[in-house]
Length: 195
Image (cartoon, rainbow, N blue to C red; front, top):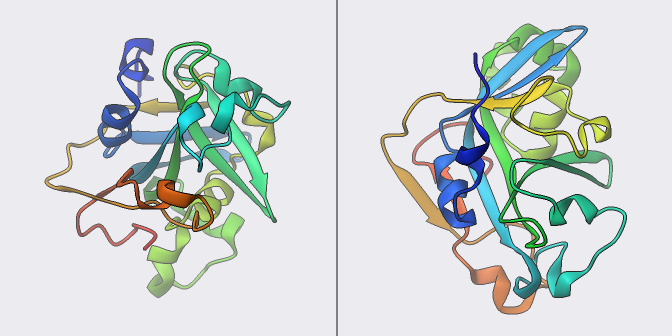
């Protein structure tokens, strides 16, 4: 599995958010390799997007990596979960894409152990949300600032989705008009999509 080259990440943010669907997200750890096809993403387009962490060019210790060039890993914590993003846009143009859900491919036993799920009928709950997938793959704050073009956390080519749906982003009700932007993308009909 060869990581995708840097030029893949240099697409416009909304295009990249769609083109990430079907790509394979891979995390290598001492416990083993775990991976899954990306089935849901959300785009956040920087300074003018009220839902973005970098709205108004807000630059903090947490958001600093958003101002780097495309392809970097942006992890952040919300409540008890770590969430993972792909930085998009040119340097000093803070844009990013949240990976919301994956379809498990490799290391499913390891994912189940990390998530505490041993019942096969709950398979879709393994990675159908941004906090669930990071726990399942072993993605944490140590991945912040890494680049997706090399291990241990990387993205490879995968499979081409048959159909893609779009709609408003989730969980950003207090962001004015930004809550209605149709910047969430998902593989139509995939059971691992979060909502």
